[in-house]
Structures are given as structure tokens and as C-alpha cells.
Length: 168
Image (cartoon, rainbow, N blue to C red; front, side, top):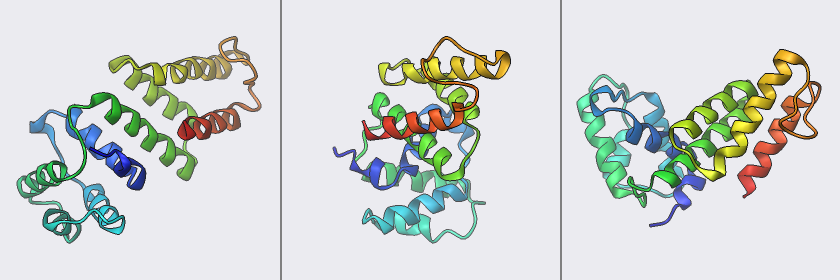
């Protein structure tokens, strides 16, 4: 199996994470799945099911879309049992989205920290430290967790860390 798909279509990280962490009875397919299918096709991952998903006009027929999603995931070079790879690529997606949309760094760190608590992984432990450092900066104006991060540079510092982490 090749994990190139996660780099080609980062949204795959979110979709697969959602699929393995959400109870089947709670699946809700949204327009994000249609966007995902379109991006898969743009990157050369195409088959009948992906094409059908990309052409979907609304998400009312959840049973059909859940079935299509299962078929798509079965057809892609992804191992649904490789939780570590799925977690890392979901975090990668969260970070890429944050950098693109310029969202709250604290919110992203909080989300990654929660993932780390649920799925401990050495590659994510720095995010927990950064989360606590950021929180302490906001509450007290200074922090002792992470050298070089100050109240003034915290957002830029976190973004630089995100970019460095993505390169690893």
C-alpha cells in the first residue's frame, strides 16, 4: 500500500479518520465527501464509485453515500487498520487547513492534543507541550514549557512549528 494518497489529497486524512473513529450508526456524509471525490479524480485516483460520488448533487441518500464511501475506501491504497498512519495524516490535514485558513492556533493545538490523549503517538507529543505553553501564555502572559515562544510571537511560532512538522 502507498500512502502517497494522503499527500496528493490531504482531505483523505480527515475522511479516513472520521470513518475509523465514528460509530457506523452516526456516519453523516456531507458535501466534503463530494469535494474529496473531485480532488481524488483531479489527482488521478478514479473509478466508478469515485466518479459517482463526485457527481452527487445532494447528500440526502445517506445509505447510498455510506455504501459508496465504503467502496471508495476499499478501492484506494489505504489500510484502515493502520491507525498510526491515519492519525498522523489527519493531523497533517488539520495543520494544512489551519495554515490555509489562518484559523486559531489554540483551537488546532487543542484538537491535536485531544487526538494525542486518545491515540498517544510520539510524533504528536510536542503538540501537547505547545498546547500547554500556548494556554499558559494566554492565561499568565509567560510560559516555561517551550523555549523561545512568547506572548508576542506565539501564533507565528506555532505556524513555523506546523510547517517544520509537515516537512518531517
